[in-house]
Length: 442
Image 1 (cartoon, rainbow, N blue to C red):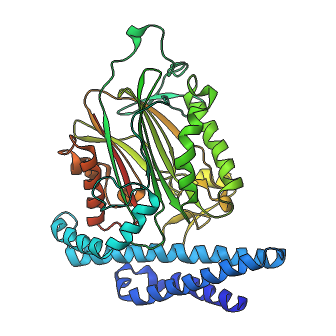
Image 2: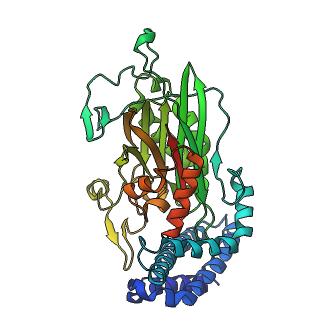
């Protein structure tokens, strides 16, 4: 049986890596074959789980099973990517250009959503409370205003920065004590009202919901705090779920956070990743994180690991807050850590041919070649800032920063409505991945 499973996995990997699959225009016609391969993977997974449970005392067999497990994940990830591209290609071909055929695409998505209603209900029960009428799964930690939390500042190696609209400029010493409540009340910036809304939905790849959201509004030490984060898991949801429950708590319990927030956030991310690797996800499984702490509506700290993204909209113009950690962009970082970046046939650049980002929590198999060290940014929120968006790559794969701003610029009076509209638009544009987003309006 072991040899049969090994042979099946080898055959699947060979077929999905073949030149045939490089032609995306042919993929939808091969949907039946893709489905057959995915069914084979489900059978193989059931066998591996059973075998792993029975062979815990045999180190040799367990090592071999781990190798099979790694091949299983490789095959599954490639098939997911192929199916996603196939679905997007079919939508584009049948409906015409994105810009001119959105209404017909929306009808297509609505019909798909109706067919998945039962699955949506199950997801809602598993991952959290519904935002309003139960039509979208909600993987979120959101509570009513009470007490706890705060932060603000930025870095470039050992220096820390304030970010303006045109990039980072060094402000030596400015970060020291920036978050400590000043004894002179006149120096405290005037607070600005803000509110948030969020929405998330499972994609079409049938690997279970892997996006988690954290969205809380709290009071602490006289400050009005907004705590927002997107955690986009991969190869399972365990790491994303752990981050949802622990990351903000760890940051705010770090003693140095109030005086040196950037140093504190980096320190916490490193320690949290160690905890994840030791107790949550060993070799497989990981997550992105884009986390923001908004203070009194006028100061914003954002930490980013991976390819989830945060942007702001100022006078109708999109302004990036974070930069995606993509393998091509950070190839030098990977290579200096002993890894490599290459592209499988028909795929995208990946670290060691596996991971589509250079920074992530978890992913123990690649821990020597990637990092969980975040970029940390600080911004002052001016009066002409309209709103902020945090979202997973399920949205950014099909929308530019400006597209996202334009989509909701007329809905800033209702953050929940704006978040739902963004998710729906991303699905209309062919996104097959899990999609989650938070909109903060002023």
